[in-house]
Every structure is written in structure tokens, then in C-alpha cells.
Length: 279
Ligand code: ARG
Image 1: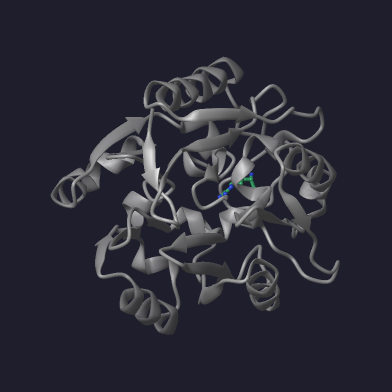
Image 2: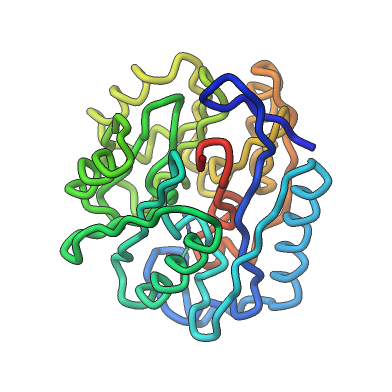
């Protein structure tokens, strides 16, 4: 069982929301990784998802499962459901119509899990934990591709947290969780190529121990990682930064994610942490 320090100084069990890949596929193109003519190997996708599920289970994580729905192939990417803090959820407003049908299901799932669900005005896009990650008490938020900058202040207000807004400039890293991963209070993975010069400066000022990830390694979804206790679970490209992670006190767990990468996702996209930051 994984015990993590939570805000109050106590310990909590870590929980992660996943959604089985029953209806996963690349059926439309809404990011540069997706090509409808490149077939997803369904059996391999199921194996890769099962391996991630098993890894979490073996590391003592409690796993909650969302119900997948036919016709919503990206529901497997639970990171995009909402951002969570203090028992509250701010539901995503998907930028692309192709994913908007997920919102009603995420609302129901999060209510089932006990969250008070808040919604943003229809006029703004916001893609949940894909574009909003806590580094300590600061909610680091990305904008530029899927999430509108205007949503950041609204999310900060609804959750009662401080936000740092960063501009994403490389379409390969269209969600913040493809290029930034908080590991602990001091350490984070970050891909400098993904950020505007000004945003990179602000991110470097926030993180005392940045592990900088070259663009080609980040393009293997290395930063799309999930820290679990003293492990960092990610795609196979994480091995390129296993040394700096080891120096920071972490072992890497490298899992093949080839089928989900065809959709522009990796380990972190498939995982929405419910505790401790989820409250
Ligand atoms: N195909 C999905 C999309 O483009 C992938 C989502 C990846 N999720 C993430 N949190 N980065 O929306």
C-alpha cells in the first residue's frame, strides 16, 4: 500500500481513476500524433493498459474504474476528465467536439466518487488534469492548444488555489502533462522545448530541482509520467532520464505505450490521481 503525505501532514492511500480501453481507437485526428490510417493494435492496447493497471496494483495504488462508452474512444484518457482539489472537481470543457460527449459521463463518475462538480462557462475550453498539475500548492496550468488561458483564473477561483499560467508552443506537446510532471516538492520533469521563453523562465523559477528532458525524449511521452511513492511510472523513453531521477531518489518503471501514443497519450493521460491532491 502506498502512503503519501497529504496537505494536513497525515497519510492517505493513493487512488487513481482509470477507464478500460474497450472502445479505444484512433477514429479522428485532433492532435499531430493521431492518424486515422495508422491502425491501433487492439490486443496490444489492451495488454499495455493491463500492464499499467497491474503495475499500479502491485505498487499498492487503489484503482477506481470509470465505465467506457462506445463512440468515445478517448475516454481511456481519464486525465482529461477534470482537475481535482479539496473534494472539488472542475469538469473539462473539451476544445474539440469529438470529445465533448465525454463530459456528461465524467460529471456522473466524479459525483459517484464523492466530488462536488463545478462547471465552466461554455465559452471557454479547459482539459482537466491534462493541462493542470499541482507543484506543491501551485496549480501549474497550460494554455495554447486545448485549454484557454481565460479558464485558469476561473479554475483558481473555483478550487481556491494559486495558479501559474504557462504557454505551450509546440503542437507535439499540446497538453501540459506531455511536457511537465511534478515528482515531489522540489523535483519535476520538464521539456523546455514545449514552452514559450517567458513561461519557461517562470517554470524554472518555480521548480528547485528541474530534470530537463530533451524534445526527442519527451516525444516518447517520458514526461507523461506518474510518480507513485519512490517510483516514476512512464513509457519506455523514461529510461533516458533514469539517472537524474535516481539521484533525486526515484526508480523508473518503463512500460511500452505504443498504441496509446498513436492517439497522443501515455501513462499519465491514462491516469487521474484521486488522492492526495484530489482530496
Ligand atoms: N487523443 C486524445 C486527445 O487528443 C489524447 C489525450 C491525451 N491526454 C492527455 N492528458 N495528454 O484528446
